[in-house]
Length: 595
Image (cartoon, rainbow, N blue to C red; front, side, top):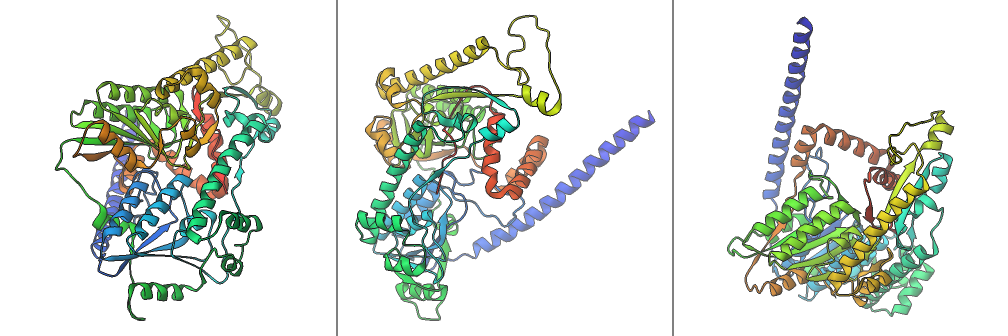
């Protein structure tokens, strides 16, 4: 009994200490948030203001739809793409905003996202407002965005890293061989190259073909846009990239990639000149986050008829719990079910930015999309940076599909991978396994005993069945035969512009086009949009993570690994995701790293 009371007291003391700690953390958070709110109220958008764009942070599709650092008490909302576009569009009509200042060398976003922002800035210029860009050094992505500016300035010791696109893929076959790990790999589609890093030490000819085709389309689009903005021919732009003429500030100026070499004080002098300010006048620079929250953010409850915009962003995974920046089928099934039962929701727009994932989760989400259609609610898909494999699966039977020209889509294929550790355990650790079975397949699926030929055939048959199901679903949605879809499937990725020409998407356009199409299909003249899923602020993510032990441990481990591995973290995450995969997968070939 004494021991019981000791343990009880220790448990109560631990709980009390934890609650005490949470209380003071909460007080700190409230204090910091109050201070932050006070500082936000001080932001003044006066006449002769400049909208400042700085895209060093990752840009999600929906504001805060990513894993945020809950310990960064000064962290503001991380604007999503659609809110950024809304802010730029509002600034175009705002008489207080005289121009845009693109301040920075890079953009942490996919190619379709960068293209959408660039198009919004180009539209902003049609209101006879100026756009100035400055950086110490321009990355290719940063320069692509900056190239739309009226005036591009660069630091005297800077450069423009414009040299064409290349894709790099890490291969793990050699490492697996050293560890005596045998990967049992099953796939359908000769271009379904997600498994290649685990069975080859270099890219297959088919993989090179599909990646080269995408890169060429992406490069053609980039060259065309830069040439138009810089008043150069496309041949001149290609020559500049081929010779790497932007590698220094002087050579970039000579090649007409930039307009002027300048220090920061000279940039600010140019901004004052464009606004009409005196030399000592302060430039009122407004961040896109502050501008959105003060002037572009709107809540319209005046109209009952709604179009639900569902942001399907991230890897598609099995599970019921929310995962910021990922698509769990449990959460999205509930969201779509709620939408389906809401009589005021007249149409659904599914904004997909996903490389795919679990077949089971994709099927569950697909089912709810189809039930929305059966309920009489039109479904329109808008594709972001990536809408491939499982991401295409959940989209394929929409009433209409829109993609950006640089969207990565397709990848209609299936695979499964299972590591066999039998030789690793025996040769590296001296551990062997033996079994007693009541039936032939009783030990089937163990990573410590290799599959028999019959077991391997069972898995491949299941892969082939899943692939055929995928083909049939796409064929139904795109009004073609499975044989016709098979010709353009095989796991191959396509650029959005090419996907339109082969019938995988209906037209090129962003989310706004998709919403207009949904309104037309639902015969709506007046409507409002409502967004799903609800995203969490940093404090909300913090509370959720520390109240669930698994989430807390995962969060700490992830941030430690990101800090230690830095640029190597994506390779670790790839291996981790493969290990975590359960069941058959419909995923992009790999994380396409374009430089």
